[in-house]
Amino acid sequence: MEIILKEDIAGLGYKNDIVKVKDGYGRNYLIPQGKAVIATESAKKVLAENERQRAHKLAKIKADAEAQAAKLNGVKVTISAKVNEDGTIFGGVGAAQVAEALAAKGFEVDRKAIVAETVKAVGEYTATINLHKEVNAEVAFEVVAEAAE
Image 1 (cartoon, rainbow, N blue to C red):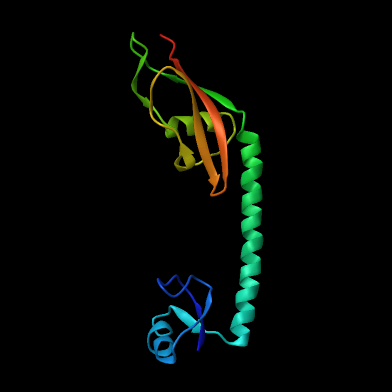
Image 2: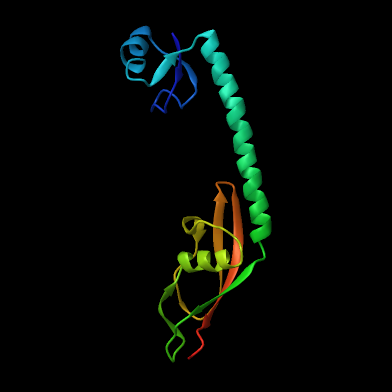
């Protein structure tokens, strides 16, 4: 019998695959567990339409990410931090501070998408922003000593 998988099943296939299985396995396990549906002609047409729409949505999301990456590449932000006499930062500067500095410049970026090691010294560094699984942006940031009051 032919079925359409609703989720990934190890050794059988991935979500939305049309696979052949023995009747007992399909009717007694996969379909009652909600892991598959019978692959009728109408179900195949619905699957094809859903795949087409999903591909369109994914292409739009990727295009938006590429547009944002084009804006972010080449941007440089300055982050001030409290330092001691040796130039060592109290605490550290990480992704959260880079996200705040980008927000101050008008770029809304999720801090979880920023890959930057925690910086402990004054200097210039680079952070990578994962906007999409295939799209990354590089942002330069400079850590400077906070002005004494």
